[in-house]
Length: 349
View 1 (cartoon, rainbow, N blue to C red):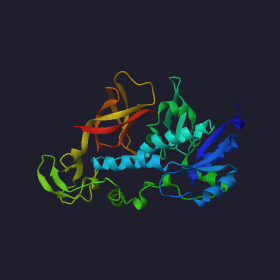
View 2: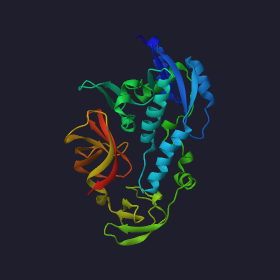
View 3: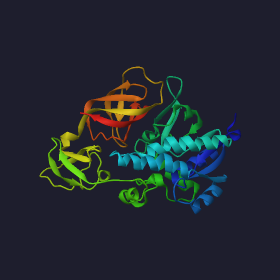
């Protein structure tokens, strides 16, 4: 089948990355359609229509606000209420972009869904299709794609796989494409305006948070905190108490509504346990060695990963790692290939 006979839906945000992804596919001869996801309160941006016209592709809106609220926002609020630190971008990619959106575009006849993510999908040594880090290691987003179901990989295109951000920006200028704000260029969440987490959480139905004790690693009382959602493991500032030497949040205990503070050395963990593992390889039957990345931008630590039951893993690091945070994703790599990922449940001291 030639490209001109293949329909591809491109998740078009209006930003530089997705615009160039669409342009590259159009240049290769694919039948390209732009799809703009409506996920929260933001209406479609005016410049999207101009962008689609210049690209010469049709554009339609896909309204997934109800799914997004249920699968991402509710998860975000619930995790904070549990004293955990959620990662809604990881959840959104799996449940919304490469879940509900992929289903929708395939039902409408598109063979592939394409996005502007910096990651690679290439044939792997085991004969399957593998997810790998993008060529631009500084912009690599494979961490955020680690929970994509393995079976959807053959239906995904990532046109920016071999490009750097600088190259993408240069191509955007060459094409003279209209530009607009792109949520993925910001560290803010697209559904929390101005990064005002506390205001957003307090406005959500069912949200609750209450003061509790600040204690040291021996359980000694240090003071009171204003609510668990104001703290995350590894946090140094805004602790509410002062010390002669730097102290950090080393643990959050939601059952007792306690926040444990300690020195930098107290942040180190020799391992972790994680649940709901998503394998992008044939699930291993026994122990394997891999690089375990415990948050975005974390360089990773070499570790032994042991399956626990149907969907759990135990991770033991070769060298202790700092700030293992329940609620965050741990992602496993061998060289550049993503083996899979899971949600961190607890640290192993």
